[in-house]
Amino acid sequence: MTVPTVSFEFFPPKSLEGSFRLWDCVNTLAPLDPSFVSVTYGAGGTTRQLTHEAVTTIHKTSGLNVAAHLTCVDATKAETLQIAQSYADAGVRELVALRGDAPKGASKFTAHPEGFDNSVSLISALADMDAFNIRVGAYPEKHPEAADQAADIAFLKRKIDAGASSAITQFFFEADTFFRFRDACVKAGIDAPIIPGILPVENWAGTQRFAKQCGTHIPQVIQDAFANATRDGTTDLLATAVATELCDDLLQGGVEDLHFYTLNRPELTRDVCHALGVTPKVRLQNVA
Image (cartoon, rainbow, N blue to C red; front, side):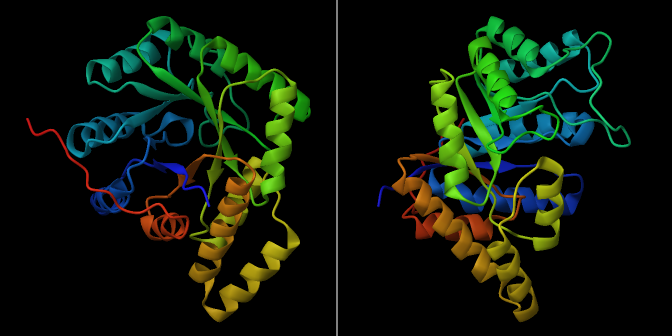
């Protein structure tokens, strides 16, 4: 079996306890030598400053290649580009550029009067800075706001054409979902790498809510299996097995890179990576 290249997503801490959890996550997964790690924004841009602090601290202290999430939500173009410049000044060279979710309480995204109206315009402006490798999001199953998947894929092509180098997908449960999407993207003329996003199920109830929000289909066999595992107290074992099997199917289909949504709880992701042959490596850090 081909050993994949891996990357990990973290979210910024909102409390002292959350800070300890984040650093535990970084320390647990850093030895797996990820190609990059990313740090998210909260819904509506609510963790903008926390994200900045987490990104710059991880960059300085861990030796990891860190990608900062940057969105269009609740900020002017000048403010957004200033945030990007502050990342460049700190030595961060990776961004994940997203439109972003609507602020809490809002039913849909509304652009700031002086802000970027969508992710394409944001990506174009970031590309003009010539300072970053820009990654974007992709939906292997139709985005809830898209007319259909063809429109989704056409918009992804616009993002790539605007200056993005690769895309990371929303999570999904069946390898064929990704393969169909990948084939459709190739047919649409998208030649940038598309990295599948993997969510090891840490919390089954939370995963079901998240899947409903983002349009991810949960096969009945998965629903039944987690219902039984929840009753039997074996959800971690099942989650590891399900994620490992999904990743193995993807690797068998030619995938070389996997991006894990860790939810700042690293054990399941670590166990899945180990099962795939991704083992700890000695990391040499630069000491100032």
